[in-house]
Amino acid sequence: MRRFPFVTLDVFTDRRFGGNQLAVFPDARGLSDAEMQALASEFNLSETTFVLPPEDPANTARVRIFNRTAEMPFAGHPNVGTAYVLADRDRDGLLRFEQPAGLVEIAVGRDAAGAVITTTVAAPQPLTIGETLPPDLIAACACISEAGILTARHVPTLASDGGNPRVLLEVTSEALAMAAPDHAAFRRAVEALPALGGRLSLYLYRRDGERLRARMFSPLAGTPEDAATGSAATPLTGFLLSLSSAERHAIDILQGVEMGRPSLLRTTARRTADGIRATVGGGCVPVLRGEALL
Image 1 (tube, rainbow, N blue to C red):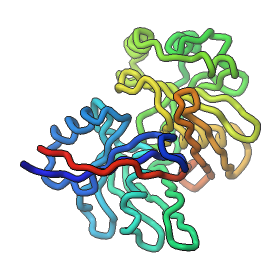
Image 2: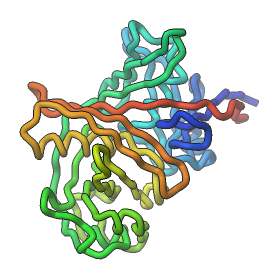
Image 3: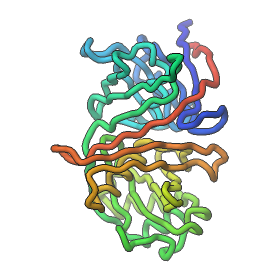
Image 4: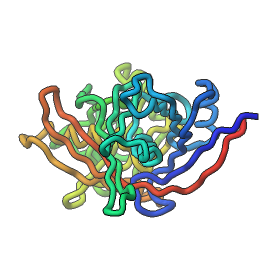
């Protein structure tokens, strides 16, 4: 029988049983693709990561990310949490993870005693803004009225910076509170909109003073609602910068409140020579250690 140690963490939080859950296999050598997918499905978390030796020794590791149904090219909270687990491998406070979306750099922040307090992920690609989508169709997916979507600044818009594209939509306070994913409406939307490529994730947000409140629905990937979505927070922050004349900005996003798992995602975005680049970071809390027996 083969044994594969794992740890679980709560990510984007400073307290246990908050934030977004993550399982990390720090040494996944010997696991097949099918076994990785089976383990991710068994954990039944939004994502599970598997750490392998890097192809380029200048990098820290090759990190594969699986959700319940498929491998992902990039994701936010899995990188934040995996960096926390591998922080002892950092070089000058920086980790470099090889992933399908590109090389992902994660900065490690420590306190005066050297303990890790934050890890901050740079999205591997500049912001890409995709198609706009019909508000009525998107409203149906979130079980809200079309009037609950605010369109003065932008209509529902696809955006990405290395992860799966997310539909970004600003909503009213009432719509954010009452929203819920309608699985049938999600299926109808992907059939009606070929541009989605069979995938649909909604990132709803509203303004809350100087910060944002957000929720994320991705039921077709097995995640009806996500407690913290770094790979949606970075394109949102970059997209909002694109709507302004500023060179850079920083936004704190509170997510997961409605699930009883409040998460704080600290994001930045800046204009660069190759486009808008964004980061997302936060704290982590270890929860469990164990072994998978295969």
